[in-house]
Length: 134
Ligand SMILES: [Zn+2]
Image 1: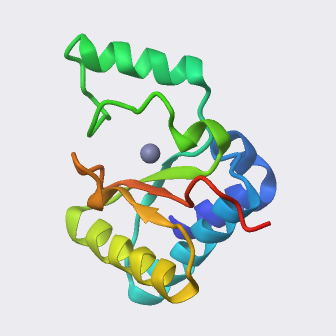
Image 2 (image 1 turned 180 degrees about the horizontal axis):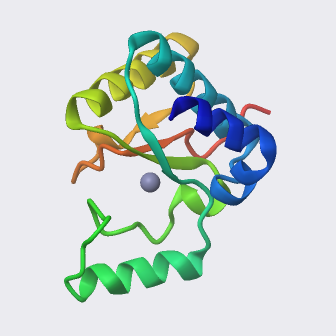
């Protein structure tokens, strides 16, 4: 499964599936390596998303159809800039990956965020913050 994530990212299928900016691509690859070395598996759900798609998801949420959604998507989502991605895994795996990303942010002095720390929590969500490296 992790091999598929990497293969998709490298083959261009990832461009369809993820289309992340370089910093988010880097974070996803580090999370993927960490998961692999820890024996954890996840699937990649989404990366870049259009504002139109976000509005559709908000309408879906507001209509009470919450399949595939943990929280109501934010209107100013970092998914619109390709600076966020969503992963699907069991709670324990997302907790471990989230703690890893939070520690990484502290150690590297970056703005990486894990949605598990949001209110309301969105444990499948990871992003690299508003500001880029450069
Ligand atoms: Zn997200």
